Length: 193
Ligand code: GRF
Picture 1 (cartoon, protein in one colour):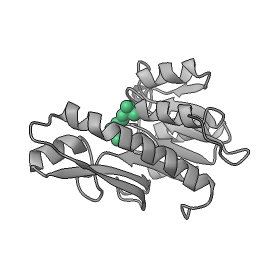
Picture 2 (cartoon, rainbow, N blue to C red):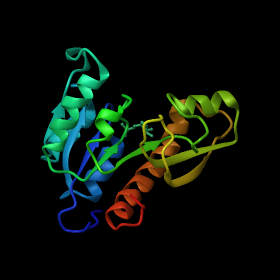
Picture 3 (spheres, rainbow, N blue to C red):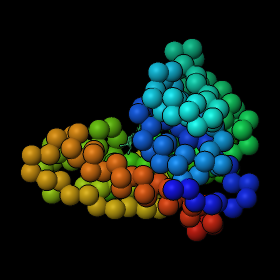
Picture 4 (cartoon, rainbow, N blue to C red):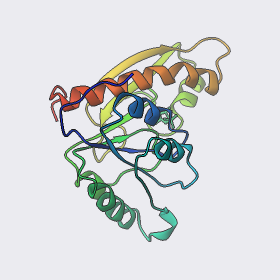
């Protein structure tokens, strides 16, 4: 179901994979997703954007000598869509300070209860650690990876026999709900950034 954000609220979504978080944002805010950016031309997230009529910005990291060169061009292409917020929704590259400096705020969804299990494959880390619960965090991105202020968190149980897939399946609805809520809170001035 779609919700309403303040008039003129425009944000970008960055995705590298399936884009189920992107889809939740497109469903909730069809008028406000100004552009979808990513590094993988074949990402299903791009098909979701095109189906929703949202412009896509794809840059190939292989075309750039350094991360900063890529992020400078990427930030410029995204900024051209006049967005005041960028949302990382399964974007699998680290955003350098060059990118972060271009926007007032960058949110990200991470599949763990930060600061636990930062970095890649957080669900796999939780399974290997044998914890009985993990969770989802939405946080603002800062230079240090997965370390910015957390704006929303919710625990998700790890059940006996869970695989990465079954755990992620249980986490995704929580991710979608927390991310949609965090974007709304941000545009309503409740997030402090
Ligand atoms: C999600 O688990 C998210 O927490 C993580 O990457 C995954 C993206 O999933 N950052 P999707 O592409 O949104 O379905």
